[in-house]
Length: 309
Image (cartoon, rainbow, N blue to C red; front, side, top):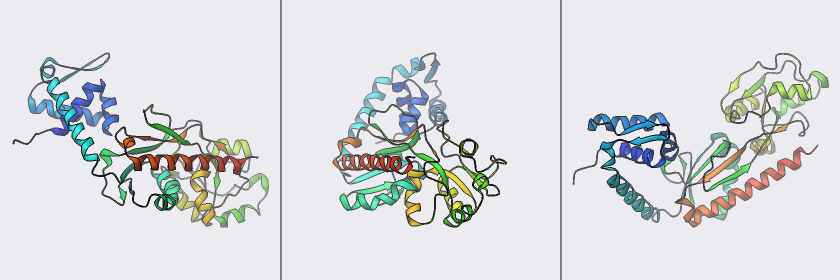
């Protein structure tokens, strides 16, 4: 049998035609729209014909593609059927692609509890875990930001942004005048909440709660919370971070709250999770989903209690 060439390009083509746009196909395939377009262009160059045109309503198959479209749809329908059948042979695996800060700071400390409850379930989080990575076929995805309107999507929790520091810096701050405690301390800025335009930053926090009047916007910027919190633990400054993410490190004593917990603000957006349609038919995924939603509800309730003025 002759091997099929350009299989990934054919997959991109089928998804683009079925969904009507490169962007929708990209979201389905966990690619960028540019990558989908490049795959289709490579196939067009190989065949020497144009396969798609762009119209006001999205992408449209050309006459050259229209004749082959029924066979293309049938082929990928059969491939999906085969994939679904093969899913039965890996019933104990769960593959999760997640916001890296959420995975490291919130999920990882709670995984021992899940493993005790579901000892036979094999987890792979962002390519690391009990089984080899399969990022192109993830069972669940977690992100911070607005809803994506997916069928099996659930809100997890919003977070309470407040200053965090090392325990040593917290002690130092306690000895300084209340109106200017932050003067002279480096302020670290996190970009991990950029999906939420209402997330409070240092400028808004000091305007609301005082403690500093000058050079509020200066300081190192961090794309992710984990390296910023490592810097905070090393006494390199203070950061505004979500209480839900740092609860474990506060309990361990590597981080501390230099000000009253109510001196913060809720994020406008939430962490969210979605599960693939194939995944939700598997019992161990249902167990993981139910456990995850229960833990998230507990987290938000505890944060609400801790921050009540």
